[in-house]
Image 1 (cartoon, rainbow, N blue to C red):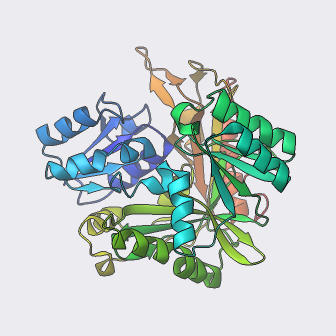
Image 2: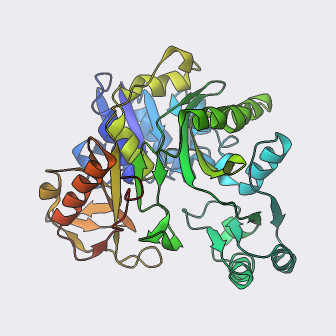
Image 3: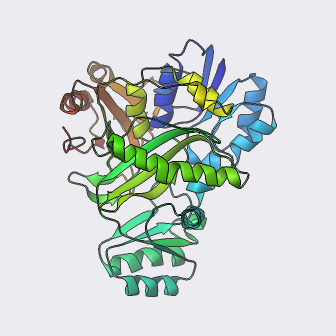
Length: 420
């Protein structure tokens, strides 16, 4: 098969790395890719949001399967365009991608189908939103309705902080059109976990469990980020809890979308809060998580390509996915200044030394004319290692982190420490 992966981050590097190992893969391309992905695929200079360019490339190169990594092209309808051109694509239609593209759409769907989630209200008027915050009290959560690159959520500890978030989104336009409407939710309590399932429009095939670390600093302090690390599996999701999540959250969502004529095809990623009342849905992502994808691909024993193809053909009942027992840990190395103003262009050395104890997934890199690897994003590397225990996996990951010679970067030092 001739396969195209769309995207340029750590998630896409992990997918490309896993896909290229499949005996079914005859040629692998990535658009636009990055310095690390270039080791596993032929990178082509087409933006992940250049819908016309991607469809044209897939047609010209007789691509058999397109795997769409990031959310933006999914919400923009890339899969719809590919399918209209007769090209097989793994990912949801624009209509189904609203699960991530609009938090208001998601919350209303949950309300209609009794899917457990936080109480919420929607606002486009800032003063009405601030009045609601004052009436509800804190802690409280303020979310931009649309896509905001993982930064549109404020977990406010005080009423003043929540009011400031409302002002920034609705009046100051911090997130542009994505923040033209806000969803304000009750602040749920409990441990968080991530649940992933492949979906073929009707059937949901659960994948391995994971948990990520959203806060920027050790001890889960600092601002929310796109994710500073992840662990798989997580003891938070027991077999009994996974069964509840599948029955109470995932399957009703899949059934609801199928019933409305917008069946979901792709990977459904549920961000969960495991409350005293049971699992509740925080959010859906309509693609693999980043950095969770890195640990999932590290642990997946079976070939991923047959599962991706089966999802696009509505026959997930015909496939299975096997996992290595060894846990995996990924530590994200970010550029100085992330998440607010990441410093770009700093040189990264020591990657070969790091590779001695871990897999180095590139999330935001580029290679210059002299062959040097430079930082080109906020989250730049995903150092991923496996071990007999979570403790051994995290030790190997941090050995690799310490081998990276990059004064322009930093990382959390406690990824996986809570379950090691």
